[in-house]
Length: 360
Image (cartoon, rainbow, N blue to C red; front, side, top):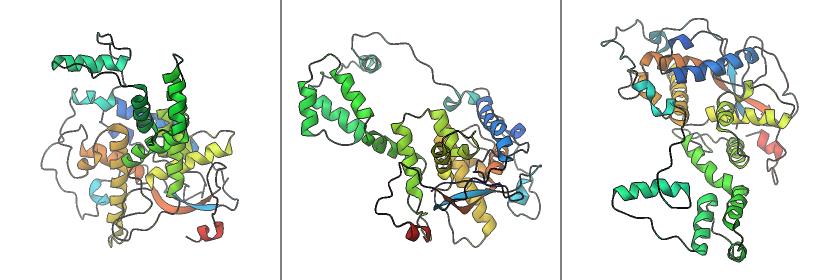
């Protein structure tokens, strides 16, 4: 599954990004300077690409989900109109101000390398563990033997036990770099991405079907799953991993067609998630889908629960309702549709009947 986007007016066949907007919503953001910088940086770099025609997907290929951009509005639509109310409702309470302390929320701050606590453990991580144990009057456990260490490391990085050959190889390696060689081998294995990619897939609510009432199957969801696995195995920088899933289609094109296609597949992140497809009120269904996208972005990328601010200022996180609808308006410019996209060379299509697949 993947997403892409096109502007309805010009039928430009480029891919989706919620940041493919040129209307001014960012002045309404009040999450924090860090959050505003994130959205504004992506918006500035993507808005020009969103207006560029590039009809490149014309060859016969497999069908994938995509997103079609609506003409970006130039005004902020009042919330009461978005909800279909007859008239605006006066807020019972003034907007809760965001304090300076809340602007220091942990997810707004860049990670810092802390000082190393005192200790004699060979691994720096054990210095932190040892310091915490010492405050409780405890000590580190004895060092594991080589066979136990091998099993723990292999299970941890790949989710699989070591084979007899791998056990013998590690036990026979008496070099001082034996442990480092073991780690490098496991990190280079395909099983590493398969193991640790699953944690990210849990965060972004990955499933092979829609769930809820009609539970429609996502015949292409595996393409996004494989993108995540490949990203872990290729040690993709996190800022690229993040941007590709929200705005991969609007990133500057590279000379590699496969890389460009892979970015489109990454935006399948926005299609995943439960949707009440049998909802009679289509406007409500659209608002619910957008709410699910906004909530997932907040939880996955910022460690915050944006969804609470749909009805009221967030009671714990620094997210006023005004900010929620500013972000919601960004995702509100897109809708789900179908699109054809070629398979990548590294995608396993063995035993795969393309014509049957295209009719799904």
